[in-house]
Length: 268
Image (cartoon, rainbow, N blue to C red):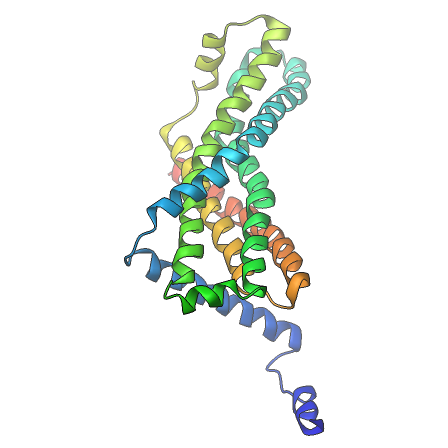
């Protein structure tokens, strides 16, 4: 026992303990993602579980997305109006709001909300199953737990979050119209016509594409943290917390890259 303790404490690290653990985690995440793509295209396909997860992720998040999107539309309109009034360009307000929401805010706000709600839920659920050995019990029952638990949830988030993002954008524009109508008594049809006057196909495509990437990121990170949870109930809380933090970090990182690429294509 004393000899084992000496071997553990005298372990050699390539760089340092923290750096080695970081690269080890990156490699394990890469292997986990690669395994997802291998399992996703092999039968059996659990369509019923995918639909069930879409219901759990999508429908149960709908109220929160609706309220948040509506408030974002009102607040952003209120904050933008004084700046445009200084230049006498209040008529540009619907177009400005439309560009901001469709290009960025709709997808980003939805992803951040789902990272907090859905990502933590997936991490805690799978983490609880891991520490209580339910995943091992599924393997004994000749069920592939990775395919049934991970693949279905990642597919569900990848499908559902783009739909929620489009809905959030629509509701945010509706909230913006509420503020504009209260100030100027404009019609709903005219507001949406002006809002989409400068929206191109590339804007809509990039927004949907971002939402798909965000959905996949939230699903794969939440499943990875939950599927590899350790240290009992304490590890379940850690898995849920790390799933939220890492998902949000990756979402912002992906946002920067996709915006740069879309701007390059737009000016090409």
